[in-house]
Length: 284
Ligand code: C2E
Ligand code: MG
Ligand code: MG
Ligand code: MG
Image (cartoon, rainbow, N blue to C red; front, side, top):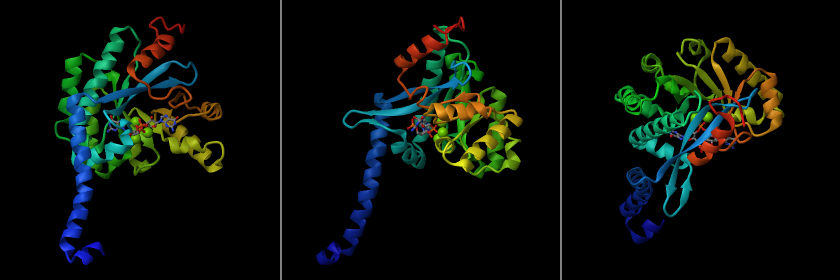
């Protein structure tokens, strides 16, 4: 009604719309700058053997260290950059950085474990994606089986194309996992045909495992199904010992969550690895 008072409808609506897009543009420009000026960084969260507590994988998670606002969580900006396409160059940076870091850990003498990187549908469907992965592996000298790509079930909205890409990636020798498993669109009928190595049971299932009998049954069923299809099964978002023992009792062998460690910067992960993954295999 402000516009009406001013007798200028057009201006009111257009400035309102601009208000929305200007905020997005500012964020997008901020992220472009962040990428150029090194404000993006990776944190690392261990994936742990439930039986031995050894680190069997590490997931790289992006962080934006904003000069004024401090750390900004990926949930605040990943959806926007997925929409605008900026996720493609950002995603390339993530893969490169993660592979370099994995190589550094290899050089420091830590035993085999893959570094897992999250990949958005937009990146996955990018024509140069496969080529790029090959390039990074080549440049860093990292073995393909030390890189794991986490995709979500949403790639199955385009099943034929996704199947081709997945098979090409599989041929390269990288590991493939389905993130947030159980929250997406996959139908069980093609799950068995997917050339994937691992499913990650979503945190939302793990949260209620003890208090919601149905949720417990769901998790048991996912574990059984995954193991029967020869996938590695990992549970995400484990926060308590009670959740851990439920998962252990029901055959889940790998876990990730605050119970073991929050995502941490490189230097802290170095220390973590030192305690659990010395090449001798003997935890100190
Ligand atoms: P995700 O891949 O499912 O990662 C797991 C998220 O759960 C991470 O949040 C992690 O910090 C959090 N988490 C892990 N364990 C626990 C726990 O025990 N309790 C609780 N409350 N949270 C836990 P984060 O780092 O904020 O990332 C959120 C999402 O953003 C990721 O979900 C992923 O989908 C996306 N993301 C993160 N980094 C990247 C990236 O480099 N590229 C792309 N495309 N997406 C990314
Ligand atoms: Mg993930
Ligand atoms: Mg997840
Ligand atoms: Mg996710």
